[in-house]
Image (cartoon, rainbow, N blue to C red; front, side):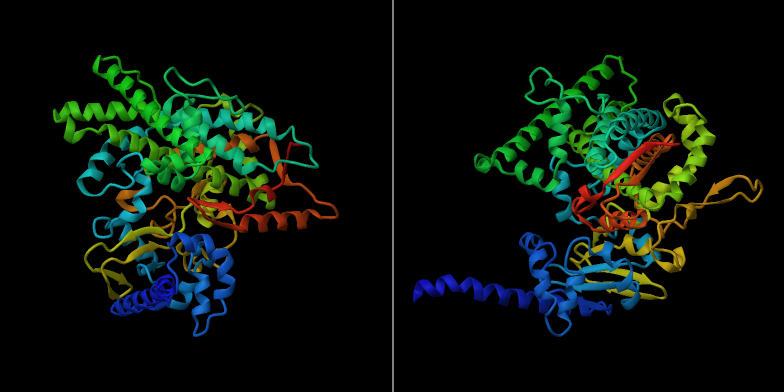
Amino acid sequence: MFAFTILTLPFLVLPLWYLISLFSNYRLARTSKLPILISPVNPFNPFWILLRPYTNPVLSYLPFGLGRSTDYNYLGFAWKDKNRLHKRYGGAYIIVTPGQNQLIVGDATACNDIFKNHRIWPKNDAFNVPLNTFGPNVGTSEGDAWQRQRKITAVAFNERNNSLVWQEAVKQSRQMLATWVLKPESVGVTTTMDDFFLFALHVLTGAGFGRSYDYDSPLKKPDPGHSMSYREALRGVLGNIFITYAIAKAGSLSFLLPASGKRVQRAIAEFKLYMRELVDQERASYSQGKGTNAANLMSTLVRASESEARIANEKLRNSLTDEEFVGNLYIFNLAGHDTTAGTLTYAIGLLACFPEWQDWIKEELREVFGDGDVQENEYEAAFPRLRRCMAIMYETLRLYAPLNGVPRCTGTEPKNLKLGSETYTIPKDTLVFVNNAAVQCDQQHWGDDSLLWRPGRWLKQDAEDKAAEVPVQPKENVYIPWISGPRVCPGKKFSQVEHTAAIACLFHKHRVAPVLEAGESVLQARMRLLCALQDSDMALAMRMNHPERLTLRWGKDV
């Protein structure tokens, strides 16, 4: 009997603890006077993340309105919801959970205030932990540490580096396209997302670290003293941020890891070693007055850090530490890998669904490049003229942003949130999510066709030259894929150049269309692709659940 009691005690205590926590958090949320939604589960509970696909259909039958919680009890719900909940509950609402309460903000002005006042609304430490796997970085630091790192890292993203990004992206796009056009039309390309992961990886190795690879090149032999090539190590640590973090912290339990886990563990060690070797080499060159003058991110970052230290003569305080070097180089790669691959995958899929926009960008590409090749043109001359290609990226990011729900928190003190003419006090220890997915499809800002993918909305006729087009600049607070305010993404221009170069190369002389299945019309095929694109969820970034269903055929313009 005693043993039975001991065994059943957790099953009695756990639900009770959940109910007490839920009620306590509900009482706390009521003090804000904001609308309240209740979720009987914590969306960030690892077990719930695994079980949700199987249990949510059951939870949808819960009484007292709790069944509706299946609309918002998971990570990334904002992308599927768009701004429906905000239409019902207003510019902000609180989701009460057994874990922490979540403030969801979809009012454009309030979102902008949160980004601009980053000291008042800091990043959440719990979300930063996996991002600090290799060391502190500009993406996770706060206060003086952030200012110091921001000053140094901002120098790395410059026009010389953008030119290198252009060259690498053009090279990778041409070589990738060459493999696509060889696919039989009846089968087509089913690996678009995976191919763009490799594309993004190679742009990062070239423009980030000065190591250029051919798109379809085999793995090179490891450098002396290494058991993995640099590319293999980088690919290993970028595969899954949470797995990388867990394995990095495995410590004495690492012997329990399966073979795949041990391979990631080896990639982690190799990546750190490569980073330290590259940094040490660049430092040595700089100290001897032999700066390489290379344009890649790593070289520029080292020179900027050493220069800052020399000017201040206070090396430890003003330059980057060894750990910060590795941490920042990792975060640069992480931020530019999944996001680039995902955005380009969505853009190509949407262009296949809506071929009229292929014709639209081809008009621009003919004007800029004529019958020549894209690789014959320099970044400085070509990129500023590719406004329609840039519009493809802008519109794709508006509706398919890599991150949906930018995390912040109130910290240890209550914070005031202004919505219109009202001010609300948000309790301490509240998670805050800036709902960019809602803001970027709000009909109030984007019109009645806000849910329609229409790249043309980003250009308008020049008032003076009717034959020319000029970019449309949305208000700062209604378009925030790179965030806004002081903590705007430092790699914003890097990503724009990379994406634009890829679109220009792929569509200058080629076009894409869906592969037709048996008995299927062209319109039905396009709708099938659109459904495959819509079937997406948040991982590290937004991605398709079944990318293999994006079946595409590439061919030359007739």
